[in-house]
Every structure is written in C-alpha cells, then in structure tokens.
Image (cartoon, rainbow, N blue to C red; front, top):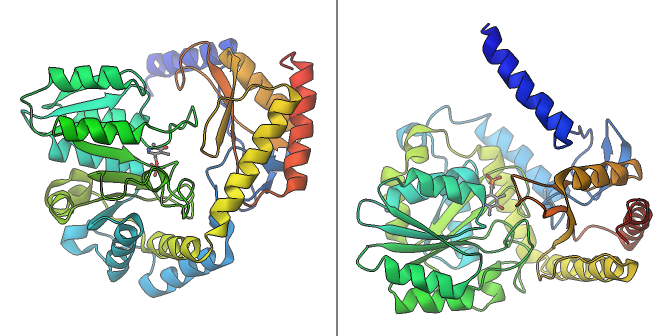
Length: 396
Ligand SMILES: *Cc1c(COP(=O)(O)O)cnc(C)c1O
C-alpha cells in the first residue's frame, strides 16, 4: 500500500466534507418506484429518478427480463463480433429504429458507452464537432476521444454563436452539430428546428442525444424530435435505455444503415467490450412495446409535471421554465443545495441537490424529476415537505 497516495486521496475527500459538497450514497431496498424504502431514511417519495414512466417497476417489463434470463442465460461471455450477439439484440435494435423512425440502430451497454463509441469512430482528421457547452459529460468525453477532429463549443442554445462556429470550421468534413435533446440540469429543450436549419445551410450532420427526451417528449414519447415534428431531419440520435425505457442500463445509436454498419465495424466498445446483457435487451424491448401500448403514460407524465410545477410556483418557489419532466429550482451555493436536499429527506422526500462541478458555481439546484406513476397524494405530500423546508431555509 502506497501510504502517501492514500493520504493524498483522503485529504481531498476531507476537503469535500469541509466544503459541504461531499456526496453520500443512499441505499434502497425496494424497486425504483414513486415510493421506496431507504436504509438511511425509511419510506420516502422519490423525486430524483429518471423513471419517468414508472417502467422499471412494471410487471410486464420485469417478466420479460426473467424470460430473458431463462432463454439466454447470464450472458454472452464475448464481444459481439466474436460470438456475443443474440437474436434478441437484433430484435431490440430493429425495434429502436422503428420506434425512432430511423433506418437502423445499435445498442451499447450504456449511452455513455454509445457516445464515447460514436464520435471517435466517425470523426477523423479533417472533421469538426461543434458541441453545446452544456452537453452531457458523456458527449464531452466522446468528443475528447475524437482527438483528430477539430472541436468547438458554442454557447448554450445560442444559435448566433453556433452559426459563427459553423462559419469558422467551413472546409471541414464532416461537420457535426451535437446537442442534448433535453438538457438534464436545466430541463430545457435544444432549439432543434433552428439547429436543423443551420445544419442544412452549412451542410452539417446533426447529432441529438435524447436520453432525457425519449419516453418523455412528443405525443407518443418518441422524444424531442417528435415534439418539434422533425422526424427524419436529424441524422444521428443517441439515447439511453436506463431512464424512461425500463431503467436498467443500455444505450444506443440510431441512424442510417451505413452509420450503424460503420459502428459495427469500427466502434471500439463494439469491438473490445461485451454486449448489452440479453436480460436487459429483453426488458428494454418490452418497455418500448409497453410504451407504445400505453401512450396515456406520456400524457399523465405531462399532467403530473404541470401540477407539480404550478404548486411549486404557488408556494413561492421559482423553478426554471421548461417543457420536460425536469423541474430545477436554483438555490445558489452547492452546500446549500445539499443541505436542503438533506432536510427534504428528513421529511420523506428524496430529491438530489446538484452543485459544482456538475453545474456552474453559484447555480446549485434542487432538481425535481416527475414520474407518470406519482399519485396526486404523493405529490401533495412532497409539496408539503417543500413548503416546510423552503420556509426553514428562507427560500420562500
Ligand atoms: C443519462 C445520460 C447519459 C448516460 O446514460 P447511461 O445510459 O446511464 O450511460 C448520456 N447522455 C445524456 C444526455 C444523459 O442524460
């Protein structure tokens, strides 16, 4: 054991604790649902999971996963091109493509994996990537791996700045514009109609990571692209199966046949890492089918979000505006957000405070995420806790 190394790690951790920004893991002993049992706090209402449609605890989804385990065993014990692809992978990928109205799709073990597998594969010397400054960390890291590409960041949703950057990289090919569909810390949507227009004008390729939009946005939950009526106008969609679509794990890239074939040939996680577990492929496939059979879930999610947002405003909170199921309340300092989240937990509401470095210094926030499965009673009890804590800390 290198004690100097251990001491230096420990001293960094002590600094986090002293600053009040140390994260404490909580342990759940029941499935993810609107109400869960937490080892540290007993029964609590969850307002911080991505289980937007409640599908992670849906009987049909769970059953499909069990059938998958019986049918395919524990795993492939191989990467896909060697001997690690099951028929269920093809079925799921065809289904994702059909769901998102693209030609094809390819799954990864996570959307993190998908994003880091995508950009370095398609962006070689001479290419350029222009990325929104608030894009998800997995996009940022994916772009970093595309080290031969020219990389530019545009100011968050600033279309004038995006156009400046498009002009600056003229001559590069391909030029990618990359954005989150729903910005996870803001709950706001990318300006996709304008982005698509600019992409046409400058002959760029559009990439939308719709991890927080899939299952949430659009009339039938197909995401931000459906919300804006832009079917067929975004070149590449990435997304996760670990949020609204069952919540286990898994991610994907969806796009043209040529794109997907290129990724199968050259994307490094596809070549050197195991496939999505078959059990997860089965439960995810069922989650998509379930969503298609229950479009009312998306409507209920929207109704719940509107209800919670309106009541928060009535209490005197000032949540950020937005159309997604994410309702952030900016509170200022990171330690304040964490302390507020601790107080809410004591009142039986599990909602996480986010601060630096996840969001800029001074804009720490409590991020509420709504689920279609929350009852009015659960939301009212959560709102009562918000009212109590809001007054205690002087926010309302
Ligand atoms: C959550 C999220 C991811 C990561 O998804 P995983 O499947 O959990 O790796 C990637 N991109 C965005 C925009 C996300 O919100």
